[in-house]
Length: 380
Image (cartoon, rainbow, N blue to C red; front, side, top):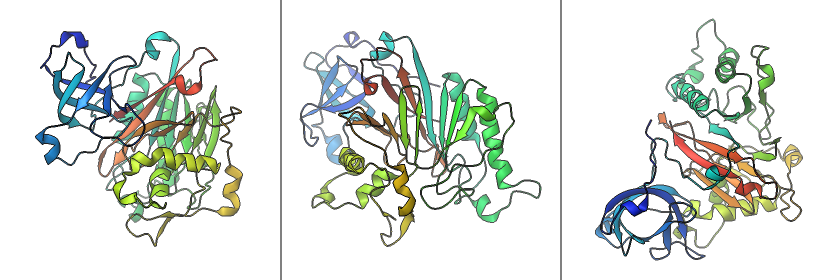
């Protein structure tokens, strides 16, 4: 697999044509525009971006703060400006945004975060699941977080129940968990979170943990939590809602300027509002985006309050990591010192999709947790 790494900028001259990967950022608060955007290469280097050319007049292109992408263009003004000629918003392969942290701190652990479905809707082909396990072994993860659905209710095989006489849904699902546990070995912790689209789970939220039955040698290495879920892993605390909370909450909100907004730009506002309610499922109902008269996920209001979590930044009482998969482009944003992650989906439509890798640097305890982690997105 190809890994793209930015070269030393001193190797290039003015008017050099380059392709460079970085993180979009704004020089000032407020909405992004064509005069205040920069591309951060690392913690010290960045380009001012110039979009004044015919390409952007013809193409319908959106660029968002904190988006990691590859830009193509020409260097100008002593290599301080990049005259952008093309945008590659989807990074295929393993393009990693490098930060100085990995050079400073030698001790770190990696955690893969992935969301199903793990097979296309038309078949029970779990090649993408096997590729995910292969990647987990390659980067030597200490934990693998798997969010369902594992056996998707929208899968054609599930709908027809055509598994064969000798195989049940329970056996097939457990075979996936067995495969993960035996492939990664006894030193990797596997976390499983159900989905309302799992054929072997409950439709209403909150959902109970999935029943897992695998070989006794590996049973202690895999654990299923509820949806939503709150758990701790060393100094990291995770709060997970396995639903498209960001987009559903935004679509259900009211704003006079909504027609001129893009949902991904409103992610901080959405999650700040959710955090103030202390529950990822506090902004309900979740409505169908095509038919707002339909509810996509039912919330049991009598039980969901049992999953309230404090978001008290002043007293250091808040989840350090929030995970919520979404149909929006993959993102990782720091919101009130909580890192919110959308890992994407392992299968999107009928093709292989995305997953996230969280790197946790074990360093000085005086450094805030949000400064000790790095999120990279991969495409299978």
